[in-house]
Image (cartoon, rainbow over all chains, first blue to last red; front, side, top):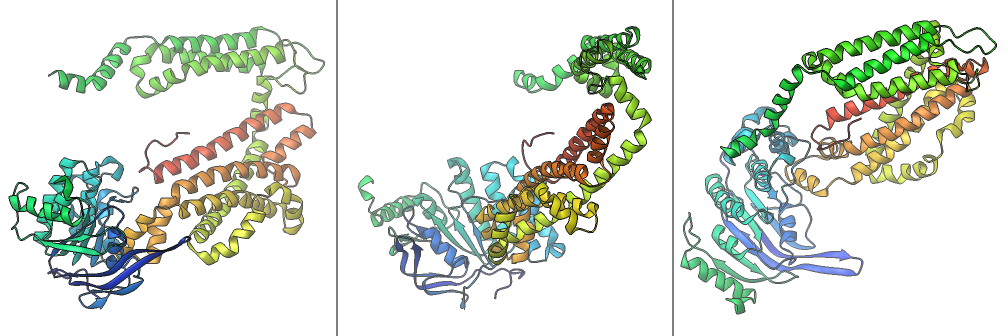
Length: 260
Length: 340
C-alpha cells in the first residue's frame, strides 16, 4: 500500500495486463473492454482517446479500484489494485462537490476521511490557493460557476498528494474558454506535483495539447488501435504544426480522416 | 457612470423611500387604530341582549382593552417612519389588524349584541377573555401536559424513525427484516391502536407516549430511508477514492444528503402526532388540551372549549415553526426553502 502523505510525491507506475471487462445485463453479458494492455511510467501523462461510450470511463474505474476487472491484472507499483486508495484519485466529469459543505470543507474531505485533518489543516488552504480559489473557502458549491467547481474538485484531489491522478473527462462540461484555460492549469499542476496522470477524453485537441502519449481506443468493446507520442516540450502552443499532424493521425486511427 | 448608477438603484431607492416615510403617516395603520377603537366602543356602548341567564362578564373590560389597543396603534401610525423595526412590523401587519377588528366586531354583534347564534354553543369574544382570566391555571396545566407528551413522543419516534430509516437505507440485512414489518404495520393509523395501547401499557400516559411516537415514527422512517437510498452514488465514489470508511460514508455522506427528506418526514410525523395526541387525551389520558376539550363540553362551557382550541392552534403552529427554524439552521446550504 502506498502512503498518500509521503512528503516527496512520486508518480505511480501503473500496469494494465490482459484486462477484459463485461457488464452483466439482463439481456446477457456486454463486453466493454477486450484484452487491454497499458503501462504508465512514473510521472507520465497519458491520454485515452476514443469514441463516446467505448469503455474509457470503465477502464478508469478499474484503475481507480472502484470495480474489479472481469479478467486480467491491474497493478500499482507492482501491487494488485483491489480497492480504492487515496494515492489514486479520480476527478470526475461532474465536480460532485458535497452541496452541504463549504468549499474548504469539500477540499478537506479526504484528509478528514483518513483522520489526518487536524495535523494537516494548512494543506487545505494551500491546495485552494494553488487552484486560485483562496478567497472562496467559505462559499457554498451552489454559489460557484462550473469552472470554479471543477477547480475545487481538483484541489480536493491534489490535497491528498496522489501518485496517480485519474481524470475522467474533467473538462467535458465546461465552456470552451474555461476549458482552454484549465487545460494549461492542469498541465502546470502536473509538472509541479510530479504525479502520473491518466486522462480520458474524446477531445482530440485536448489529448495532444496535454498528454505525452495518446492511446487511441476502438468502439466498444475497447481495444487499442494505436498509440501516438507527442514529444513536444511544455509549455506547448496550440498552433504548432506537429499538433496538427498528430490530430490528423489520430483521426485516421478513429476512421474519421475523411473530414480532414 | 450609468452602469454604476443602475448597479446601486436597489439600495438607493430604498433609502429614499425610508427618508420620504420619515415624516409621513401610515394610513393603513390609522385605519387599524380606527377599527380597533370602533370595535371597543361598539362592545362597550351597545348593551348585550339578555338571553335568559346572567349577563356576559368582561364586556366592558374587553371594550376598554380594544380601545387601548386602538390608541396604541394610532400612536404607532403617527410616528411611523421614526419607529424603526417595530414600525415596519406594524406597517406590515396593519391590513390584518383591520381585518381582525372587523371579524371580532361581527362576532361580537352576532353573539352578545343580537344573539343571532344559539347562545350556549357560540360564546362571544368576552367569554373567551373570561376563560383565560378565570381558568388560566387549569388551561395552562393542560397545555403543559400536552406539550410534554408531544415533545416526549415526537422526540422518541423521530429519533427511532431516523435510526431505522438509515439502517434500512444502508444495510441490506436491516432492509430484509424491517421492510415487511414497516409495510404492514406502518400505514395503520396510530389511533386504531388506542384500545390496545390502553390495556397493554401500565398507564394511559405511557400508552399515549407510545402512540404519539408510533405516529411520528412511520413517516420519519420512510422518508429517511428514501433520502438515504436516493443519495447520488457519485458522492460515495468520490469519498471512497479519498479513503473513506463505511462509517464515514454513512455519517458524512448519507445522513447529510438525506437530511432534507428527514425534515419532510418530521413535518408529516408532527401532523400525525397532533392528531393521535388529542385523540388519546380525549379517550383516556386524564390531562392535556384534548382532555380539557371534552371536560369543557361535558359542562357545556363552550367558551372554555373555544379558548382551548385557540391555545391548541398556537401550540401546533408553534411546534411546526420550531421544526422549520431547526431545519433552516441545519439546511442553510439549501436555496429557496419554504418559510413557515
